[in-house]
Length: 425
Image 1 (cartoon, helix red, strand yellow):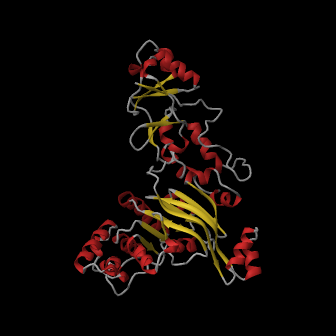
Image 2: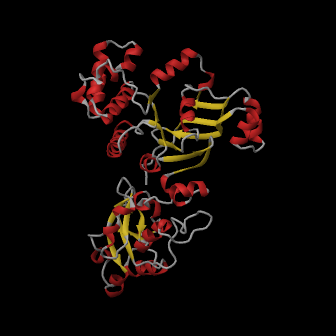
Image 3: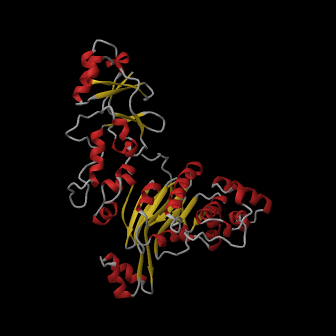
């Protein structure tokens, strides 16, 4: 489960079109009549870049746009800061109409609120690393001493504090991309637009930089629109993912939603080889809990609830919602005359909601359900090993219908006893 944030919309895009060519109005009319991208190009000579794209991005969210070459993802990200002017539609940032901005206001937006990180680094070879990182502040007119101080602080943040006086030619590709990221962050923008930023890196360096971006985002909490053609990168980084094809969004959802319920065969073809154990989280498949009221707190009532839920065990939680221990049905039946706090096992399997399924495997060694807690340590629900098997069955070679996985996440398997039971102490 991804970290929950207060939902404040930072970027709002509605009915965005971009037509490259001399007949944009005719092209849009044909789109609305159902013509394909190729048909429109044949009839008008125009190329459809974006086709009726609408979405929003929340503050502090990493919103990943993924698609193959020519799908429109780079066109989209450049429309957000008007490096490309849309043919029609609406773009709002913090409620401000970007398409209505004057050139002076647009420059101010780019200098203060939005920064962009490119695939090819775009560093100045004749400037030192610290001068590259400070460039945005120089454009703002900040004095040299102050901008270099801020730039060096940002370089420390991306692990390049000792490299400020070197030149880009002295750095590896991964280090150069860190400089590009530092340059974007030095101006302290609200929004980062990242267009295939790791696409030119070797696979091992790419994974390393991905991890660093995740850690960095926890510290700076920027709103990020991240463009990639790599599904695994999208699944790793994205709070939500939009999959593009022919200039339009095919599906938008969390990584778990994308891999568990692909919208069509096109999306299903992307996710067919994905290791769900590295994407689906404990929180996503956990069963919600109906705690037993405190006034009913006794072994007999706990056993009734356990049997009614067809559960193998139940967790005991305190008034703050934090798990204290676990009691099995066998313990209740054999020692039902004892208080629950005497019967409970204080050592029991527990997982964070954000943990990947692959991190849960070893927790089932004793056959007990796993308690799932949120970021504050409060009881969210339980996961049984059958739930994990069901979630992983989508790419096990079993049958599927219309490209859909052969399971439903968040639904207990009929063959397994549900472990969703808890008692409040």
